[in-house]
Amino acid sequence: MDLSFSPSVMASTSSSSELPDGTALVPSPDPLVHVAFNQHGMHFVATTVCDFYVFSCHPLESVMRRRGSDGCTFKVTSAQLLTRSQLAVATRRPSAVSGAVDGHVIDFWNGMCKPKDARTNTVRCPCGAVGGFRLRGDHMLVAGEGTATLFDGVHWEKEVTTGPNPLGLCAMEEPNGPATLVYALPLPEAGSVQVRRRGRAGSVSVRAHGSAVACLALSGDGRLLATAGTRGTLVRIFSTPDGTKLQEVCTENT
Image 1 (cartoon, rainbow, N blue to C red):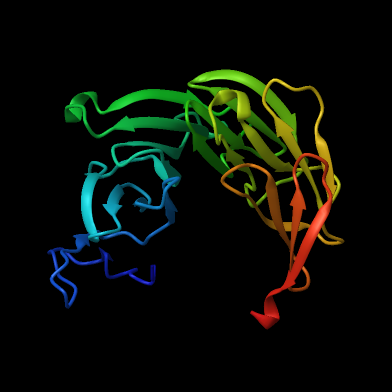
Image 2: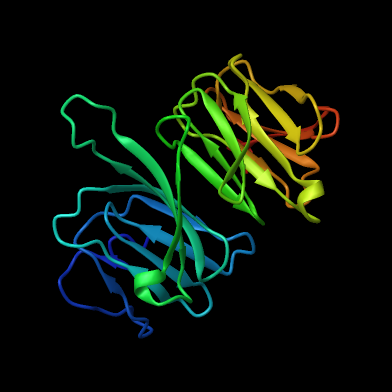
């Protein structure tokens, strides 16, 4: 799907407009800050600094939206979609005390509830600013400024050291229930990735690139890890059980 709809679907106008095929667009006065698909690619969430909108892909239409009140002080930084009506939204909340550190929280929303009850839970991030996070099943993986935290629901389960992670890199899959949960995070050593499995001690270390890791992703079954570095054009694919490199692709030739 072409996601070049900003500022069309997230139209920066005060009134609704339409695509040539008649699809209604959602007006928003703020720029788009983040887009994420749900696990099956049937829906996606688009966020501005104060609002979020959930869309279906086929047909392309709005199925849920929440708009911040005028003068809202929180800032949405990212969001993740579990189902068409269940999502989590990361926000930065400025401290009321001068010089104090801003608060970073993740709010859980359920669009099937009445508006006043739609925000069902709030988790305060223990690892500073939320660089990125992932939802799978009942689990959430949050990448912070130097560590990442795995949650079971809204309950803390495990903290992992990642070293500096300015891009908020993290990946997580749960192919067949909680016992099969696998997740990937950067290591403190530049260019390296750690693959972990819930309930197992230790991790598999993958020396992926000579430069810092720019992107990482897991296959849906959790058996493969794909990475790209900040230098060069190679995408490398590794086996998650043992870290063996299986393939590399030069993106200049694709």
